[in-house]
Image 1 (cartoon, rainbow, N blue to C red):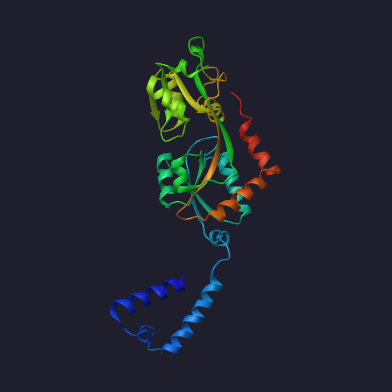
Image 2: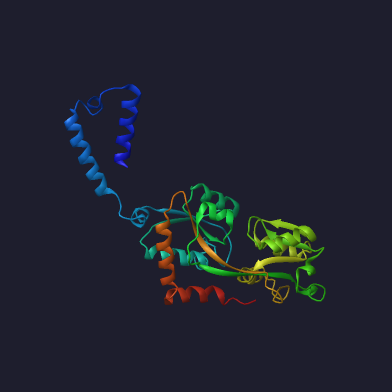
Length: 288
């Protein structure tokens, strides 16, 4: 900001070198300098945006994401993911340009925490993430975590309580947020195996290296279709491990709370449109 730069330079020169003010502005007299200072102040004030929304909308936001279909799959032009399509639509309604880049999830999280990226989708709430990022009130989507097993083992494996997981090999995804009581139980009573993506867990499930794989229902059904595991891998509906909301989160280092509120309001409006209904029906009607 012009005023900040001028004042910073003047402060350093005056108090460190004791040079007269007029020498710092090309030989102006004190009266001339005061006049210039007032004019600069007025011009700068006129240049300042009246809201955080105007300021942010004027720049291109860097948004990170992961590969997590059916929510995030940006290189699939026909079906880039429900979160991808909703995010693009809402930013378009806000007249805000964005660049979406895909990363491994752990790296994507670090980039938005440090402010290297302005936003990230889709993320569930955690206290750590809330320290570094704003969570809009309105979520982009919701998820339902279930257990998946090999169909041929359905007479051996069940899931009605955490006790059914005792001594079993459980596949989870690194850096994903799961319910604390679930993680506490399996870390104490089961063998936990981490993978970088859900797809790896489903492959491990099929070769017998896992007993259970936890996954979001929509994501799991899509993977069953993709890997041609119909009638080989099934979800267990007997117990839902967790229901949660998926958000597009914003870095507190680069984005204002005001803009996040505006994004949330626009997202809520968008959910009432036919465009939104078309997007969700496209992804949530998948069947094995």
